[in-house]
Image (cartoon, rainbow, N blue to C red; front, side):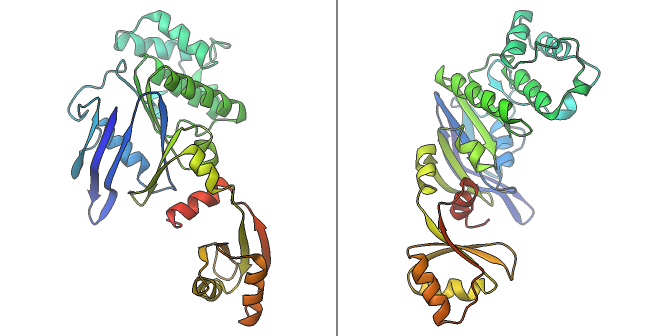
Length: 297
């Protein structure tokens, strides 16, 4: 079990993580989801003990990792891209890591096969595509066969095939009773991978919900309006009891409206002499649903 309680990290006058609390248990893929700058990586670094919190606690199995050696047999993490020397092969790199941490060489062959990197054993890492390099980083995280995986942006850089593979892999590891925590900002990818979503905005917890609950949020249609008078129309609709989320550049703002109909939006726009560039009814995309959750943070 990973337990985070009132975790806070302040840099100057800015709180990168602000009183964050959540738990992640075994058998589940938990995702920290939010836009860029939401505090996902900062939170993960605090859990891993790579940074010291300003306040609050983070523990893995009841023990804070800060000040303790993190054995890859206990916690698996993604190595930095710079830690993948281009002149090395995947097998040579993983064998070096295995020797360093006392892992049997047989495990190297297993993770190479598991990540699809065994097909070209002599190929140097420097010639890898971004998707292959990401597979190699995941292989390094799995090398110690750990019960806990804390992976920052594990789906980044993967192609469509790699994304499907990573989803199957992470779910299979959770199904074995391991605790899996990942981060990401692409809602469609993350919601299609994780069981539980911890949604962050500006370092704060926005909400915690299941992937099914998140999917339900963007299954309901809403009215989408584009107008050069976003603030004016939003005020009118809010006064009518509708809920409005604004996005886009000034002069061509998009409003996502719930709690009313497209016909009523059009009638109000005519009544208040507001120009409408587009008026439609459609379900939100996962990215739009995330934006609504975080209030555009």
